[in-house]
Length: 397
Image (cartoon, rainbow, N blue to C red; front, side):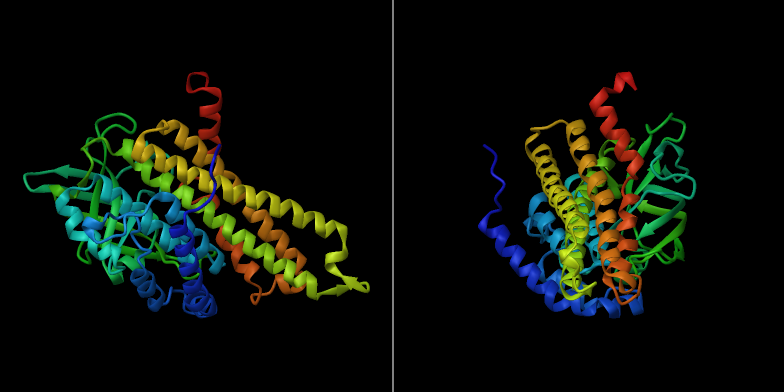
């Protein structure tokens, strides 16, 4: 029989994080939107609470939590920030610091992970380029090896946390070609690139939503980094990059579900207060059925997200599932949570009439924020391809 209960420690952590969110995040959403940045006090508080770099082992100053526990925190932050700006900061930092903690050299881990665990530095991901997103084989960024390490040249675009990493320090798990003569994704490596004012030429981009998050592009020119900044083995980056993407996708699943469930709750509260044609909006069966559909979908999506995180953890630590099984579980969760989540927020906005269309309504910016998750860390179309490949069989596609 399956046990879906959380441990006492996990429930205690959830309560602690929820109190932090209610105290520090929710009252400052409007400030964050106005200033278009996450207040530094929130990031500092998250670091003090130990919820940045949550999977970092105790050896490097972190708490060493499992993926499901990280998901609990992600859900609570998703519920507290309708713009999903802080959830983006959280999931990027946690997913990619995990990859360094698993595959990074001892020297790299000792250099960066203790500061990441305390929220003093940030780890990001630099994969997308102007001419490709999911098609890694089309990458043009190249790292040439020399006697001291690697010299990196290239361009990355639509990268999260560019301002945050510039201001706070840290760097990027960067996808690059180390053997460009090899076909397809072979010859791809992961190299950590610390932010350097000398070697990063940054352009800031403005997002449709996620007002507190920073987003941009940068060119890297003749950036020489030591050999111990290689993550995993040379020319085998494609094999491990998806472990980071899959962790991020699973976190997006629970964030999207949590965000949408909060929108549903706000929509219900509005309907309880609003009277039309002499009766409360909650008396109209059409709206009741919309509530029922959305609650059923989003609670299912939340369960799928936690299952995806559990499967991921079981494969990472105990090899109980294959990589392809993990990919399918996570793709299902991300596809449905982001698709259903957008629809649920849109319905909650509709229930609130003209107010829903105003910038005073959280659903107005939640709708734009959650829409980003249908693209981030793998589009809906890529999720469908993964599910189809594992359902039909790769040899038949």
